Length: 73
Image (cartoon, rainbow, N blue to C red; front, side, top):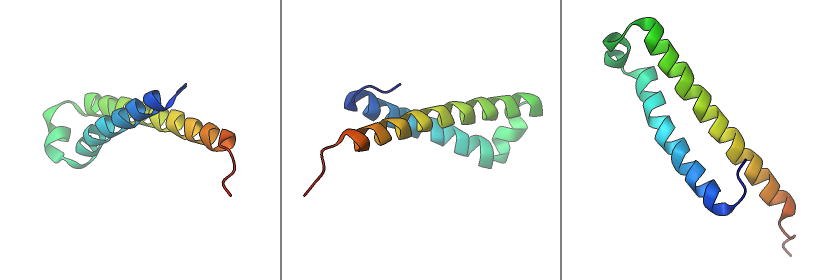
């Protein structure tokens, strides 16, 4: 769980860090051909799972932050 703005910024950095390898694993045929298909799929699934978890945590923090923000006039 993200508890503060600093952790949120770190999480956004991790999201960016995980997105690039996921894109590479999904779209680069050389990545697919470099290892056994089961290993490739396992790496891709693990990276996608971590990316989704980070996005879920960031979204939950954003929702909490919006819910507790004072109304603007």
